[in-house]
Length: 502
Image (tube, rainbow, N blue to C red; front, side, top):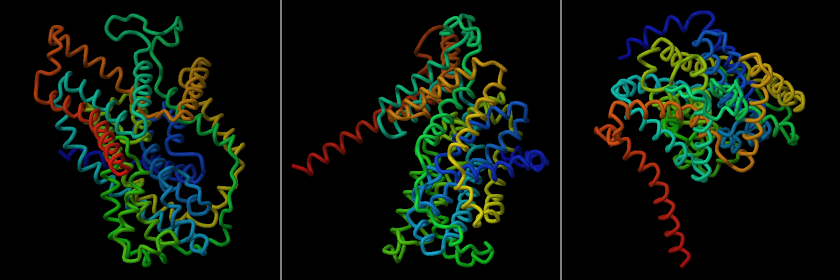
């Protein structure tokens, strides 16, 4: 089962592939250090520029950016009390008080070491759990694959949190976009509105860049950065090898937080923010001095940063094997796979084992490089990154977006379409509509349609073929549980609140 994993290792050590991971980690740290930017946005902007690259090189860049950005978010969290990424919110609780006391450098070093440990644990979880799960999914037929797609959509809609109705609307919008173009069986035009450019459907890169990259840039430009940040001269940075002996006492926190982060990463829709908060609370509960937390306790930084990095690769376990991304970044990375002709799901491990297993190694190396590169770069110079003018930063990102999207087919129609999706994404963001269901609807919509029609052809039009075996029935039951479970939970909580107030 793991022979393909070992055989993919030499290729990852190729100069181009390894350099891609190094560049990705450095770029990810820089992106994460910029308040308002995120790994999701960075990868969305990057995807169009990877068309001419080998798949493993492109995926190495993405893996590096993902690892680097998750740590990079701790930099403004510690120095400015502004989380660079949503998952770094819990890092501000103790990181910023440490910086105020002159221990900002040590806080960054705890963050980078903890991030690396969480990322390494997550990469090993991906390597150990994904291959056996892929063996099981290879036994799936068209009806089972259809129900996997339905289960994936239901999971994102109802487990993502917030309003399920808004999640359903977002998913339906994504499914609608997935059917634009020519019918795969009969060749009829569907929802092209006379535009020849839409005959091949909507390119997922255009959707990703519009939905995920443009709205944050608009917010970046319209929101001034006001902060009472810590001066770089007061960081109190020392070489990381001298700081390591002070971190040995965090080993229990690293283990506990890694397990929490991996588990949360596997759950669809949970993400690094939930992992960081849960890990922080558990570490504080287990601490012998919980009263010191929130006032500059380095173990709090370790707990938060370990967990929000331990969910990176683990979020790709359901994404690669079932096509169900655990986080928004995982959803964007699924789009990156599709760009290079790799269909996430049961067949990925059978048809492209060298690429998918090489991708796993790249995640591991990215996590290891994080402590080497981040430890070397986590110095006073990082404070200067936060002084870049926001208009300049936003303008550069917009130019990269326009160039990247135009380079896909060399036509302005794609740019206009991207701007249209960007406007929709900005409105959805303001109205609190979740964006991951849109991406998953686009990815799984056509996939579900193709397998549904194939299953019905095999069953000669009999819909009972979708319920004809145990695997399909189990998937149907899981889908129903995902839909009904949150409803029952909300009613139970409402009844409990009424009982408490009466």
